[in-house]
Each structure stands twice: as structure tokens, then as C-alpha cells.
Figure 1: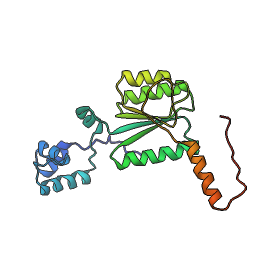
Figure 2: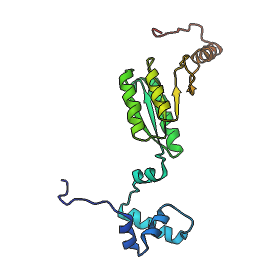
Figure 3: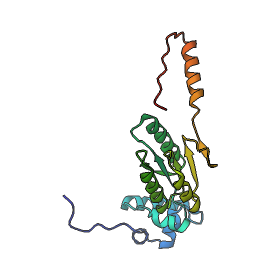
Figure 4: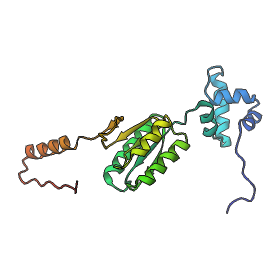
Length: 194
């Protein structure tokens, strides 16, 4: 049952009162700045953890202009191909100190356009996108807002973009070569409509 008392966030001022240090010292310790001794940092960080202090990342990103967040915009999260790629991208971002916002477009160019607008409005640091085939408008939006982006998985011959694509032909060749070297003689190739 939820408490009727309104819960309040722990602030740096609360930590300063609890530890006897100034708010400025608490701030510097939590930022791990070198002007604070390791002993003082430990006292402050331990108290902050004990009190449940959470850094206000919105305030940090407003001051620094960096959110450490990238948007991953894909056409079909249920497709195992995309699900695997997104999982790996998310892990790579996390391992490098970034968060990800994953957006699914259902191969709908209007949904995709709104996803890009949403990502830009959330001030992401960049966008990884596997666009629909009708995506010309989103590129104008990305360029006009100076958002770093990389196109993943699809080529667009009409314009020059930063693109990462998979070589499906070479992958098929290597898979077939492996099967032949493994002694397989009856190899079936299945392909979609495109």
C-alpha cells in the first residue's frame, strides 16, 4: 500500500547536513573531483548511498550538453534479425557508459519520422537508425538539427550517409562454403520476396 506521506528526493543539501560538509564539498565529492580527499569522498558517497541519493541526470545533461543517450530506431523489434542487432548495440553502448532508447517503427515512415522527432526532442547524443525505404524526410530532419546519426542495415543510393550494412551475399557464400567443407551435399536456400 502506497504511503500517504509524500516522498521527497534526497538532495546534496541533505547529504551535507548529514555529513557536516558543505554542499559544495558534497557536490565535488559526488563528481569525483580531485580537490576532495579520497577519505572525504568515501564518507560522502557512503552517506549518499545510504540515504538513497540519485544524481539528477537531467540537470547534469543541461549543464554539460551531453545526455550519454543514443536512440536506436528499428523497423521491427519482433524480427529476430533486428532483435539480435539491437541487443548487441545496447550492450556495446552500456559497456561504454551510454544508455539507449529503443524505438520500433513497424516499417511505417510516419511512425519513424515521429520517433526521430522524439529522439531529437529528448536531446539524445546520436541516433542509430535502420530506416524504412521511404525515409528521405528524416534525413533532412537529422541534418537540420545537427544530430549525429548512423544508418544501420540499409543503403540509400540517392544520398551520401554514414552507413553500416551487412554483406548478405558474402555471409551466404561463407555459410555455404562451411556447409560444403563439413560434408553437406543437399543444401537448401530459402529467400524472402525481395
